[in-house]
Image (cartoon, rainbow, N blue to C red; front, side, top):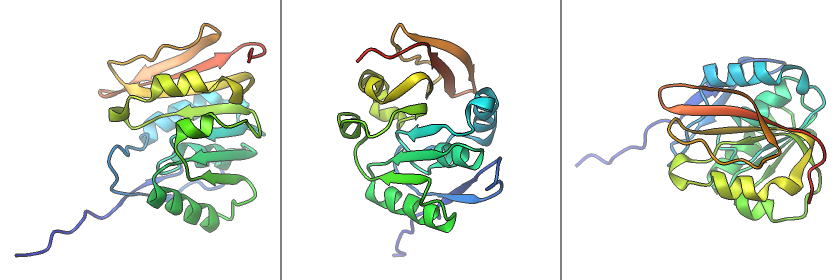
Length: 194
């Protein structure tokens, strides 16, 4: 009997900025589904002038495609939160390969546990794209307020049939969808009350 082999990992590429064309490994991990090139291109067009100098949080980092794309396009700092130890290790290797250690921090921990910590910084842009089967949108949204800068942007990616409930102070800026995914960008206006 032949031993079964795990499929080779896939890849996504950074599509803009200084690391344009750099490839990121996509491990064969349950629930990991990086945002497509088309979705990322649309998202970063929406964010446009808000990127340079921004502090970015990629809450369910996976391949790191969203947070690293933001740094490639001019964000000043990104925190990538990933609980899977193998994925977090892979993210650290990518950060080292890109010589981005001064700009990118990888937190190998559960995203919801991370949100319960006292924030070391507040974030201008937050990406919330958890594994769909885990149903983590609402707990993440409910726990994120203390980590948001005034006038922060929050990106939510979810199944097409699910629009997470957001706080009253979040205004929908743009939304779109593919056959399987709804993606939306929200803007907070004014100070977040803690």
